[in-house]
Structures are given as C-alpha cells and as structure tokens.
Image 1 (cartoon, rainbow, N blue to C red):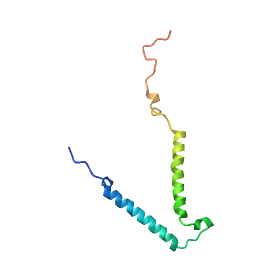
Image 2 (cartoon, rainbow, N blue to C red):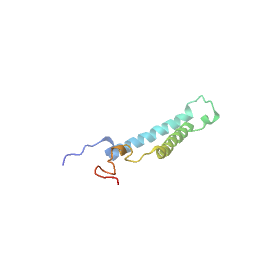
Image 3 (spheres, rainbow, N blue to C red):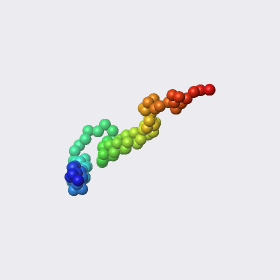
Image 4 (cartoon, one colour):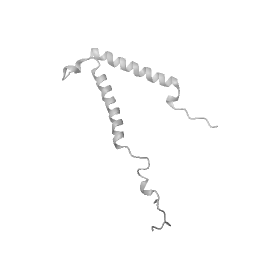
Length: 96
C-alpha cells in the first residue's frame, strides 16, 4: 500500500500549536483593549470586548441565516436531471 500523504493538520501537535497561538493572540488583543484609546461614536463601543462580542454575534447570525436560507432555496437532488429522465409512457405504448 502506498504511503498516505500527510497534511499539515493531520498531526495533533500542529492542531494544538494552532489553537494555543490563537488563544495567545486573542488574549493579547484583549489586553490591548485596556491600553489603546479608541475613538468611539457610541457609548457601547467603549465596553470591554465589544468588538469581539459583536463579531461573534455577527458570524453566528450569518451561519444561522444561511441555514434558514438553505431551507427556502433547497431543491431536490434530481432537480436539474428531471428533463433528462425518460418518459414514463414509453415508445411502444398505444393509447386506446
């Protein structure tokens, strides 16, 4: 049997490194929220972690909205092949 090709995230160690770097980066950005002065237009933008929460809720709304949209526009599996299906009567059928 041929050797199976290894991809970057097939190794659990690489996944752990990615997750820990994501956690560290997120924590660092949260710490910067205490240090950096932001010019805000609305008072709620000054809340700690506002943009993180806003981004999370926005992405969640996009995912849930896409699930609802899928229900509305979903078609059957054979939707495009219906015209190509053979006629149910057949060629040798004679109407009486």
